[in-house]
Length: 236
Length: 107
Image 1 (cartoon, rainbow over the protein chains, first blue to last red):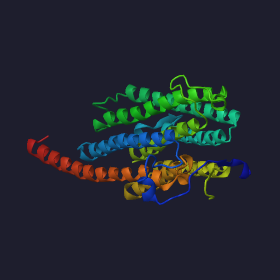
Image 2: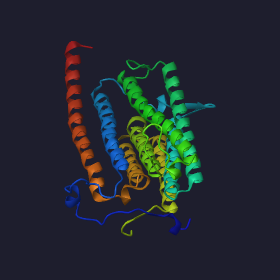
Image 3: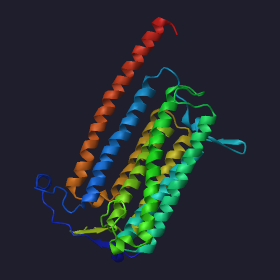
Image 4: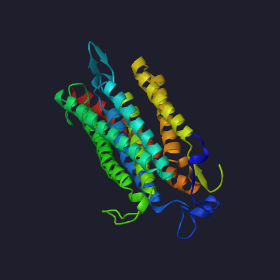
């Protein structure tokens, strides 16, 4: 846990004024690898996509005359005799946070070029992500069996189904794509592609452990979106 | 923090990781305990923003980035708040129109 071994030397040009860097020629984001900048820009655009979903949810929920279904009852699970509210959603939340933590550590070990640790942590992240998708599939199945449809449901306002399937569906798609890429990256780490600079099969570009950080950005973003969905859709 | 280096100590990660667990636990407890109304909404929002902030700052390394890229990421997000404000009012307008219509049409 000593801090000296975990410092990462990255060549960063000296800081100039904010306005000067933004208005500079050729390169505004100094010291930021292009892949990372592009991932951030993609994530900003994705933020807008999810914001629009959540805003449409707000609009629909505020403007409906019917009672909105109570999520802590709809998503409750029966454990023995007791009905535990939101149990599955809570487990999913904790799994996603755990996977975010393992991802953050994978990025850290990637920077230290610790191939084994990085690989195992990436694998753990991928497995946790896959289990999240599995639970989401279970949740969808449960709700569909109970008669929830995009146009109607037995609990209250008919818009509930449409919003539920759209938002969690879109988030689940993001997680699924993330899991696929996590497995690909795990393979690449274990095979040492980032140490030898082997060209990727898809991009035919050389890459190094920077790719792990870019992967991490995407994965943390998926977790970030879930934080908002959990708060606004499940808890509100 | 020294100029020209990015330091990501293990301790920070474990600390933030634990915090995220605690915040999620408390958010869940808010529902479990059954807070209602403004207390509930305020608590949910506080813990949501804390979690989002820590994920962004530490896990996504935004704390260690330079101001130009942080600004490029965060400035556009304020547009979302404007949109939220517009649609919030729009939705209440829709609700009023619906209520009036159903009152007249009698359903």
